[in-house]
Length: 185
Image (cartoon, rainbow, N blue to C red; front, side, top):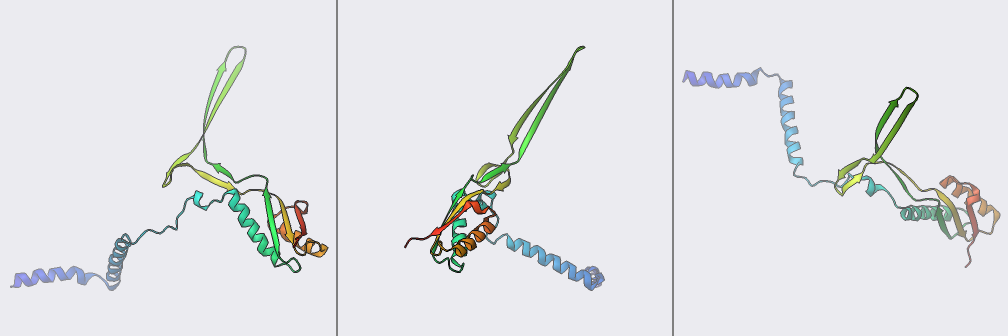
C-alpha cells in the first residue's frame, strides 16, 4: 500500500511543481490546438481571389465609369436628367513578370574584338486553381479618350462649366475631351 501511495504522490509532484503561470500557459496551448483542429472542419471562405477575378474588362470599366458620372452629374444643380458616353484610347493592359536569359559570346582576334549578345525573354508561368497563367505584376487601367454628356441643362453655360469641371476632375482629362450638350425631350 505504501508503494502505491508513493507512486501516486510521485505522479502528482511534477504537476504540483508547476507554477500557476505555467499551468495557464499549458491550458492555453491545449485550447489553441483544439481551436486549430476545429477550424479544419469549417468551410473555406472565398475571400481570397486571383488577380483575374479582380480585374475589369474595358467594357466593365466603361459601364462603371459612365454610371458613376451619371450619378455625379445628375446631382449638379441645373443639370437634371443626363446620359453619359465614355470612349477609351486603349483597353486594359496587363504587365507580366518576365525571366531573361542573356548569353554573351566574345571573340578576340589579333585585329578585332567581336561580341554577340542573345537575349531570350519568357513570361513566368504559375499554377493557379484556374490552370497555368502568367504571373501578373500590374494592371494598367484604360485611358479615357473623351466624354459626351447629354443633360437637360446642357444649353446653359454655367451648367456646362460645372459638368465639364466635374468630369475633368473625376477622370483627370482636359476640358477639350468633354462635350456637354442639351438633352432633347
